[in-house]
Length: 66
Image (cartoon, rainbow, N blue to C red):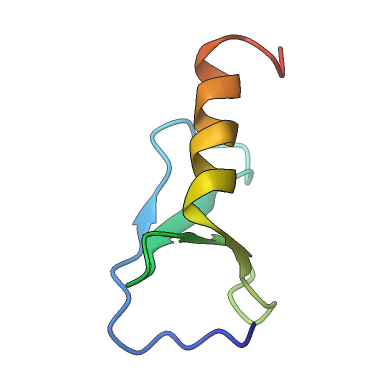
């Protein structure tokens, strides 16, 4: 899927620290999410469907990735 920054509202993750490990997320019109590297915005963003994003955030909250 091609990414277009037109109209997307990017926000930095609240979990991003000061150690150059920041990501930004934007909600897509279809409910999915775009994720990009804050320090290198020239790289392509990654797209996740709404179901994929929901599964990911549930996994984070449940400690699946600790």
